Length: 194
Image (cartoon, rainbow, N blue to C red; front, top):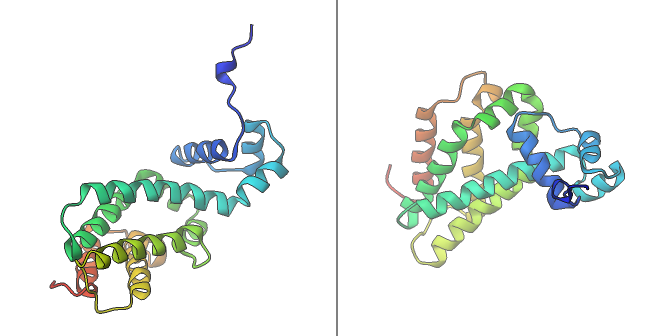
């Protein structure tokens, strides 16, 4: 008698779940291996997820977005304090995230491209997520930043990247003190006092 409980239907969502699980364990993601694991053809997997870079971008975005929602829920206040609090929560967590550090150490240049490239799924979605947070606070009447919202959302991401990935960018280990300085810079860009 066969056990159907061990058989999971291959779907795009299941492909993402498995890729995410592999990434969190520090395993390299190979589309051919993932297709075999799902018992589907490589062409089917490519239709579902695109190429490896896009799949890894989706994995990273799924992790980032859940962290972002956690930060929004856990951060009290409104306006400048809220935006800076969410920014600090997310980036402090990422600074110490072992799977992220491992990903960067395994292939630094590749990781940096996936994490920071302007063509990256993760980068563009992170900028957009910042823009949404800023817009929500502005719409509530809690925030009046002196900078253009799109520029501010972009600057916030680039500032965080310079702190989180300083080991690859400039050969210096990421430091909590620099992240705190980034939070002060964001506060100032939002029109708050340092």
